[in-house]
Length: 94
Length: 266
Image (cartoon, rainbow over all chains, first blue to last red):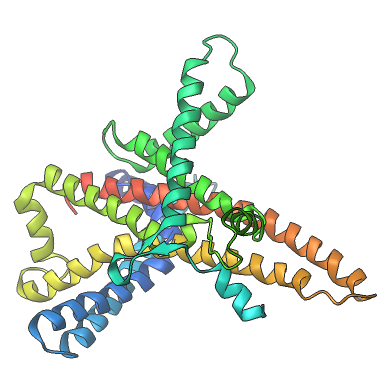
């Protein structure tokens, strides 16, 4: 089996990423910002509940930042996968 | 009235009550009227619907329906009869509310001041430049997301999402907080995006309107008056794209989030 055939057979078993990911990318930037803000809000609520200001406020802010960055990374990774698949789908002209 | 007062006056809602229980009457009235207009036009259209060659307006509405149906088909896995009507309602209602931004900024406040006889009466006619509107809409969508998540995945499935996502079974306390933050960020990003874009657009319209307000009587007016017209027209044409895009994004992200709620595995 040639290398290109191997690639094609491997491609047949992978699941194509849904177009939903593309739509989510529209709001990737604001999603990151909103996750950080949401972190601070949740932290503020927890601090208010347990009277521990500013421990949860800061900790959840950091978690929000990490979560937001991770979310954007996952979204862009899915886009990369799609781009790679499109390249693999192109017929080999050699 | 100075520049700052002018902008502040236009960005203040006509409200009653205090603190948390403040009701923005203009926002409530305008959004209700636009909703009623949407229902009224739809009902009239249904009555006059033709099966043969449709008229111009019917054609236009059918093209919007097709557009929304295609987007729902692309972005929503599975089948739910609620999603397409919900998406259509959101798209048209948000677009209509955004469209109020294109009406000259001084027209309705001036008419309102004439009618009430109060020269300082407040009136803000763009509901989507009020964070209460956008947050109310996004929280409604959020409630639907939670409802469908629990309905499709079950209570345990939904709870599992909080316990083991994203760092696995050894970081349960962190996972709970992290997933909770991610869930809260969904309505927050929906609301803030729409509000931010429309509020900024309104502010630019106000700044352009100020050119006319500060016109010097004399030869300088020959320069400032045409400049205001050109800038206003340019921003209006550009903003027509922005209001449509924002309505589209709100609709599509609603479909996407509800689609994610319908997926078995998160």
